[in-house]
Image 1 (cartoon, rainbow over the protein chains, first blue to last red):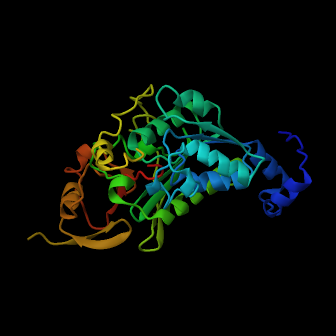
Image 2 (cartoon, each protein chain N blue to C red; image 1 turned 90 degrees about the horizontal axis):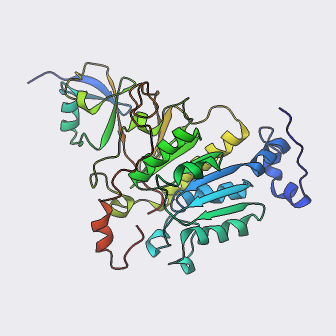
Image 3 (cartoon, each protein chain N blue to C red; image 1 turned 180 degrees about the vertical axis):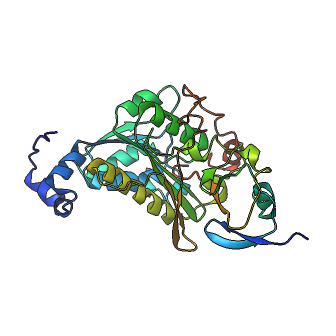
Length: 283
Length: 71
């Protein structure tokens, strides 16, 4: 396929020079990055490093969906947001930082939650989707919407000192439901809000997610598919677990039972904790 | 007392007396609803945890649900 030659400005050549120098990127790869459209679900712990590195790399359009406002308790890991941003919508705070970092980037803020109603039309506007949400109903919704719209999805999760990441190519590699059939019973698996999380861990996992998205755009081989990569910060060790497509997967298996988008009960487990927080807490 | 044999759990070899995946979860005090279990490369349906018998050399991975990100 003919790739239309892109004319870089002098400042772009300077800005992206260390990328362009890489034979795996080059001018052609950088042009592909500038044309790419990536949706980041959640502008929080994972979404921060993801969006910052994508913006720095010159990803042309970055969509951010998050319905929350910045809370003081977010700042130890959500490095897109600064102290004066407390109470500001996360997508607005994020947009300001990302466009300041790189004016080449168009940031599209979606100040809302991902729902069964908006997910498909939103995913269709982007090439790749990155999951940076903390709640399981949304994680499963993102997986299902990615399967239906055939958009690559880069899953990430963190808790306490451990993180996991996996790239999902719909119809080609194991999806989230191939591993986890359905969300855990409400309240059983603690959230970061309940159990805590090492802030810098979000940087490790989010940065891997951004790297995987950039690799996909560049068409580099060996994406993180069919492997769940886990990182244990206490042990300072990475492991990868091979995960094959599951023929019994309810959405991408041989006899799928999920044929439309639905959302599991929304975060019943989080309500009591949120109510305990004197400041009302960002959900 | 049943005799112990060795299995590989999350990449580490260990001795166990657990007869099934379910027993292994119980011994390790892991709630079966909190994990997905990969047994010799295949994700198991939760309903077969009790009937999946362990033998020496089996490879078991506990895959945990992990949220994170925005909160």
